[in-house]
Image 1 (cartoon, rainbow, N blue to C red):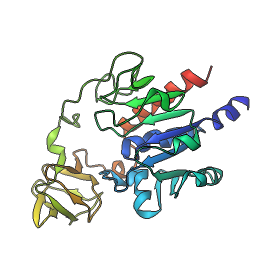
Image 2: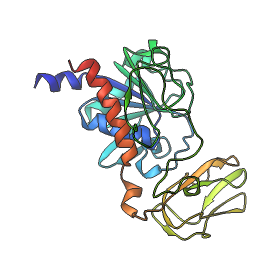
Image 3: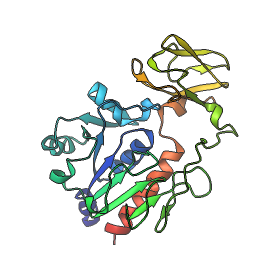
Length: 270
C-alpha cells in the first residue's frame, strides 16, 4: 500500500499528445501516476484514434478506456485527476510546469530535435528519440527506432539518429506512409479503419488526389479540414490489414512507454 501511495503522488508532465506520447501517457496513467499532457493549438496526429491530442479539438479523447479531458489552465488539473482522467492543456512551451511542479517531464514531441526541454525543468527529465544528449538535455533517453533497441532506456550518449525512413512493417517502409501531394486543406474520402487497395483515392489536398500506395488498412489519417504542407505525413497504411490495430496502442508505443516507466522507477522506486 505504501508503494501505491508513493506512485500516486508522482506527477508526470508529457509534452506531446500524438500516438507514441499517448502510449506513454496511457501506460503511466494505468500504473497509477498523475499524468498531464501539453499540446500545441493545432495538433497534427495521424493515428488519431489512439491520440489524446484529439481532446484539443473535441474537448475529450478516449484511448483504450482511458479518457483525456481538455482543460483551460493548470488550476483545473487537480480536479480532472480527481475524476480519474488525464488533463490536456494547450501549452506548447509547457509553461504550466511552473505551477504544477511535476516530478517528471517526458519530452514526447518527437521533433527529432530539442524544442526547449531542459534538465532544470523537473527533477527527472526523460526524452524520446533523437535530438537529445543525456546529461545535457535529459537525464535519460528512450530509443524510438524500430529494431533490437526499441524501447531501451539509454543512460549515456543519444538515441540513434533519424534516418528519414520509417521502420519496416512486413518489410514495407516508406510506401506505407501517405504524404500530402501539395499544400492546402485536406479532405478525406476514406476513413481510419477502411481497407484499401493500391491506387485507391484516399482523399484530396487542394483538389489533388492522394492515392493509396500499398494494399492494407488505413491505420491513420490526419484530421479532415486541416491545412497541410506538401510532403507532410498525413496518412499511414498498415499492410497487415488488421482493423483492430487502428484503434489500439501500437507495440512500438508500448515498448517506448516501458522505457519511460523504467526511468521513473529507477529514480523514484528505490
